[in-house]
Length: 259
Image (cartoon, rainbow, N blue to C red; front, side, top):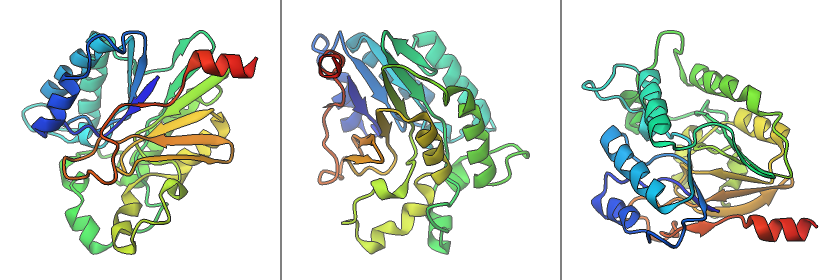
């Protein structure tokens, strides 16, 4: 099975890469897409339809870009989420707990709550989510948004199977980021994820957790859980992204090793 995130098909070269994935090579495979395909519902439909024709199953969890609001669609990011839910249901893109025999896939919603650091004035001005997302009155800040999404995850945290793979868009812990990241690039850390999401993943204890958002590809084992980020990223981000599909799990091989 394969993992991918942050395709950002608003860039035509990224869209063309997705559309040109081989039509036959992955018909027996599952792909996890861990958010940030596009803020456009039209492009989201095009990408889902294309991937559905190429893979056995397409699993998805939305990122921050998907929840950007356009006035001609909806007025609230939660309403946008409902439209995405409906689109996934229509196209049979998996957006809830999904199981294939001895393998369970667990999608975890999340946001950022500044547990990785307090945003400075520059980040508060520059980070587009603060303007492009619109939340209802009962979710007045990022902490409330994070708590709302994490509460929705609670029924999934008791999932048990021979193999469990969870996935989120946002980072569950800041130490998945490389120590080599320059200090001036760490300004965005406050909006990368939530340590409370990490607490949920520690409770779930998956074999693998797939995440996105940072655009920095990673494969690291921490506290017995293998964390993987395979972000396609922006066209200019050649050095930090693989720019290709990445196989994260082979069920037949894992079953043989477990036996």
